Image (cartoon, rainbow, N blue to C red; front, side):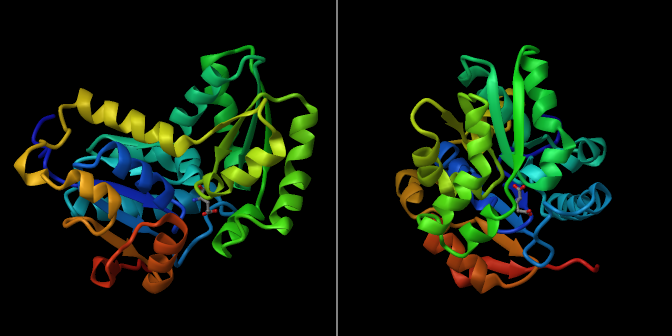
Length: 287
Ligand code: DGL
């Protein structure tokens, strides 16, 4: 694609640590690619902020990633994808995708009955974007969306498998189950980390859709289509090993707007992505 260098890194950003669930999928599916990640840990959460604010934050980060000479960008945050992606597309000159469209596409394919649950932050739910994409793909679909604001702090507190979490899952999801959904979109970066507990609560007749996984697949196809997949070969000889020690591979860089230590701990403890202290830098924006 034009003058974009296919050996440049890919840029990935999120409101904080949650986008690392997308990084994990990218590392699995695109082990040859170098990643520059930005987590806006000083300004998280985005999920209860206005559209204007999320667009402003997302623009600042996308510009910063472009300054790092990334060849393409993944908006690894459902809220930023829902509220800001279309705006970013107008100004960002490299290919850019979000997590919402791939997730919606996979859910439409997964549902037999056409009754789909979507769980996400308040901002994503009120944007109505999952419903719009789902109906674009299958106009007959009925969508039941529910904001689950307590899930993010539960995950960040490490309560992914806990009776308190189980009862909150039931509080949020029982209504959706009563509607007879047969697919459920985990429409927030943190929710795939609750996958086992959610699967227990919804039972085997409901397919759980993880947009992070679907996004990595779509992103790989996009890079391929634009001839931007980085070359394989001697430079990337340790790929199998890189998969095992994701995050420590040379060339991956992580930027956060606050608390680099907390970020590294979450990456290591919750996602088994080990990141060296020198690989996380602080880059904050004013305001
Ligand atoms: N990353 C956000 C999302 O996927 C969740 C955390 C937040 O509210 O910023 O929607």
